[in-house]
Length: 318
Image (cartoon, rainbow, N blue to C red; front, side, top):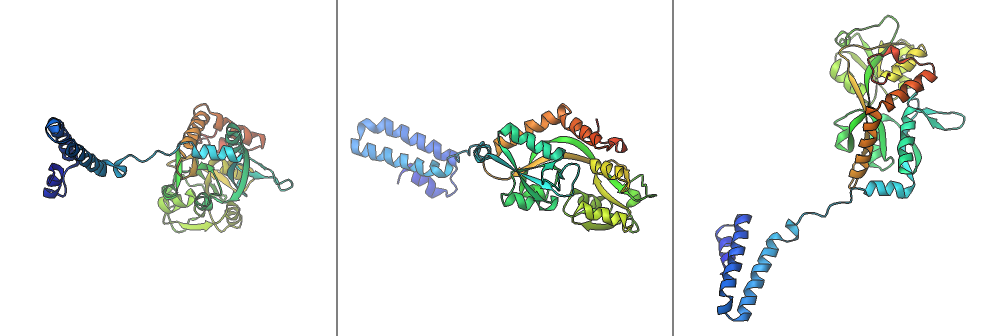
C-alpha cells in the first residue's frame, strides 16, 4: 500500500493540507530512489502519485470559470434597446400623452439619459410598482428607476448601491387633517390609503399599524378615496404630494419623524450583470453628487406650476 493510500485508509477525513505534504514527500522519496529502482517502476509510481493528486485537486476543487461581467451590457447594446418600465397615472415622474401615446416625465428622462449613454433606444413597458419583481423575473424589463430599498423585492432583483436623489415620504390630507407626527395617526379612527405592494404600504403597516389602512391598486384610486371623504390621507412621495397639492386634491403634510425616500435603481438578477450595475452606480453617483437629478426635478415641477416648497424637507427641492 502506498503512503497516500495508507494515510487515507487510516483517516477518512484526512486533511487536504496533510495530503499535499504527503504527495510532496512521496515525490521527493521517489526522486531520491529513482536511480536505484527500475525505470518502469519509477514512472509507474510517479503516475500513481500524479493521478492521486489530480483526483483530489482536480476539476471539483478548481475555481469556477468567472462569468463575463459585461454580459448584460453587451446584450443590451446588441439588442439596440433598453427595456424600461413606465407607470400610468404616476405624474410627474411618468406622463403619457393621451393623444400621441408618447412618454415624458423626469423618471422617463432618466431612462432616456441611460439609454443614450449606452447608445440604444428606450422600449417602454407599462406596468405598476407592485408588478416590478415579476416583470424582472420574466425578462420584460432591464432596469427600473426611482425604486426604494425593499428587502422582500431584494430577494429576486439586484439593487444598485447608492441613490439618484434623496426624497421623503409625505401625506396628501383632507382639509382640517394636519397631523404633526406619525404617532398621532396611529389609531383606528384615522383612515389612510396606500398603494398595494409599494413602500407606502410598508410604512403604514409598520409605522401606523393601528390606523385603518385602505390598500388600493393605483394612485388614482387613492385620490378618489380622498375626494369622496372615505379616507383622511394618502401616503405618497414628496413630488407627488406637491403635484396633488397644486391641483387642490388635498394638502401636502410632512409628519415627523421625517421618513427618507432614497430613489435607487433595480436590475434583473442574472449572471454577468456586474458591469451593468457598475455603470449605473456611476451614473447615479454623478446625478446625486452634482445635483443633476435634484435640479431636473425642481425645474420640471416649476415649468408645470408645481411648487416643491410645500415639502421643503425634500432633497428633490433645490
